[in-house]
Length: 136
Image 1: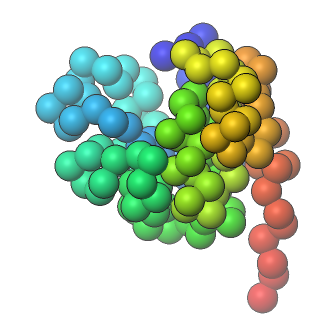
Image 2 (image 1 turned 45 degrees about the vertical axis):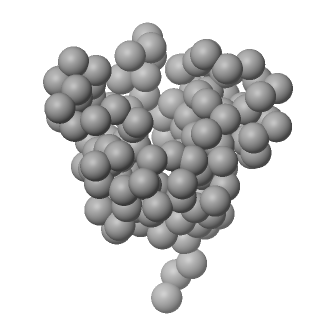
């Protein structure tokens, strides 16, 4: 996990924000790739065994169903073009993590709505990108 990510996720949790992950890793590999501190924060963790893998939108929709969040009230932070395509296909705000393995130009070309310059941008400020929730 990149430095700053866990701190940001903890601050989102403190704001009572649902947190899910969609990974291309298979469930049997999760103990090796998902640190316990992250696993404890997740309300949902979707693998290719749960839904078709990204860039298919069904994996993102599966995560949203598990956390009871509508697509227009969600963000997907991802570091790959496949993440951006999955977010867009699912109707979710696509935020490109430029500290990953793909250049910002590839994330933009794949549909990133915004680019995050470093992991410290993960936190409650992400929620400002979302439209207000209508009151009923």
